[in-house]
Length: 453
Image (cartoon, rainbow, N blue to C red; front, side, top):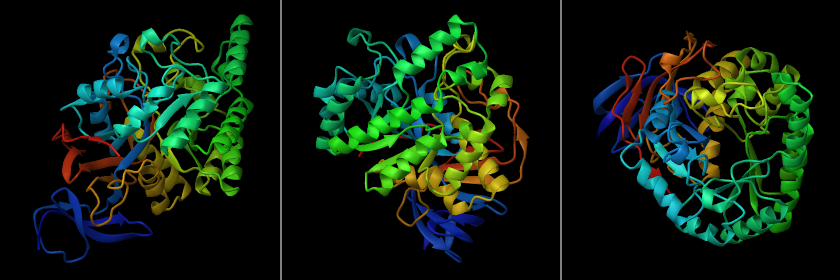
């Protein structure tokens, strides 16, 4: 049989093993796996490379159309950064763009904004906000892969503003009840709003304005309390729950206990919690500000233990970019978000596989398989016959120093600038088409589509 492409001689990460084998691609799908597969129009030599499923990044903010935030990040730059970073599918948050994605009309605004501008695939989330519970069904009918809410303070509560905002306990309960009826998953940002806001205001009033003061204003117990509350309400309502970007082992332990009791709950964390500690946060400054915050080295070591023993379902970037001016000034005033979409695969491969001995099969599950399964992206997340040929080839033991010029973002800054990263993305394929090559850059753009379920 003749194929469009055959990837030869690489170490291929399959479902339960990583082996040296070949992968054949035809009509955008993985058509065969094995040796002596036959002929192809094109051969890709992957000698010395790791051939992994393309990353399914389960937490990405793309601010398009942005309204007053139109200069933050658009589909064109975000999805090119994704391609360069080995991400083949982005699961997009329903904020920070204006209007927020909270009903059928605003979802179609997003689809229109991204038409013809996607270099990788994008799956959309709808939002749960105080004023859209009666419209949540519209988003399900249009194929969103889930819903997102905040219980920490965010956005503008005025419905006329078009912005996203957090829910109170009653709104969370009502929203969970409706999503349980719809059979959809709720993703939640879990921090206690009142306590974090109060501690932050107190720190500023008392002149405690360092990065470590910011961390202290969002202590671990505020995350744990919100996780416990969400778990209890989800259990009462029967809502499937996913906890976003957990930053502490104590919060993850709550998820593990609930899961072991039979509750349908999952959790994610982010690369920055494993790659940056509080001392590095102080050195980097506001580019590394996020919430929940970067924590100390002991917390990070215990997070690694939780990741390696399987208590964290997957890794995301929580790519949350802004314009440079919003990262200026004091730590409490700066925008809280890290630009990181381009550097999840290389950093987690370096820190996890190369430095800590993570199995290649676990790496692929954390970066691709598990998020694809959670969001019902049946064609994604695996190198297996019949799946989309979404593949990232990783060059191990290949150090480089990240510079601003390397970044594909609209606003070229990142908390990882100046970092020596010990692996590189060599090539990214979306449905068999090369969309990034280390020697060429982003190539063959605009191959991406919106993916619905």
